[in-house]
Image (tube, rainbow, N blue to C red):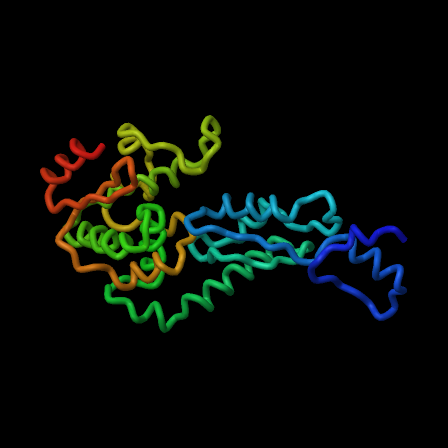
Amino acid sequence: MGIGKAIQAGDFKLSPSMTSRDVAKELTHGAIDVWVTIPEGLRIEEQASKIEQKLKFGQNENYNFDKKQYISLAKEGYMFPDTYLIPKDATAQDVANRLLETFNQKVEESILKSAKTKLSNSEIVTLASLIEKEAKTSEEKPVIAGILLNRIKIGMSLQVDATVAWAKGYDTAKNTWWPQITTQDYKNVNSPYNTYLNTGLPPGPISSPGIDSIRAALEPADTPYLYYLHDSDGKIHYAKTAEEHNKNIKDFL
């Protein structure tokens, strides 16, 4: 048939009723499943775009994924970031269920109950989502968790820029869901997710955290610090007081 070079590797749906020619043709249509990697720290709209990009290709005649439906079905913070093998004909409901089931498997109720804090399960996931956006390394995450909890204990606002960015939504000029935040935004973005205007945790997660961030929220470091910043090289600098923090800003930013 001259199609030997078009045969693809992967998993295929075959039937005992198929002829040899039918089987050969089927093996040129591409595998029935597609590998999709969902990185940590994405909000559900970003996840939807990434899944659509992977599933919506020219040879996929069975495309059924609806991005808008996924956004309406997905639960922010609980769509577990991982690498998935997703059927080419998967619906938004199929994918949302799969990611939520993976969250439930990876983050079992018993794990959440082992928390060293008095936070509820939903608050742990919310805190983990902040840590995911704030930390650059796994080593920083427990310390940042401790700092954010220190702020909550003393009634200090969390002042996490990512929460303001989440509230602002999509920036069409910069083509991003995570726009650069200005000092004016701290005052002008009127949302319960604005952690400059409101104390305590935001009402819910702002992204889907990975397992390291969830562990950090469960087991925060016991730290005296209240402030942190990253310099241009990505190195983190901690401070106990506003004066020390202002000096770090002057020295490292």
